[in-house]
Length: 106
Image (cartoon, rainbow, N blue to C red; front, top):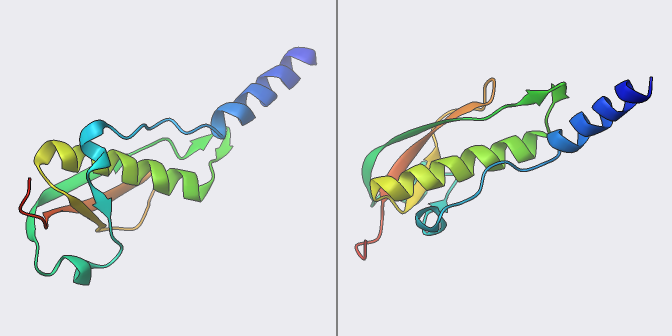
């Protein structure tokens, strides 16, 4: 019984952790929620992201959304983008983002 309790507590702790870290390039990428915010920007591609959305039980939806955005920011930074916009809903821990270049300083 003690081992089961330890396993459950460990699972709960792991499910509450944030696994994705924003890279140096990703720090220069902003997340906007509306396509209108990027009307004057150049679209340079898409970033398709995926994280684990359940570990024994469903993870917190906000944490999953933040991790997906952080992954997209990292990918956009590698692509030379400076702005991302969600292009889909979150389904099974997956989400797509449009990647844009809005500022000429890059």
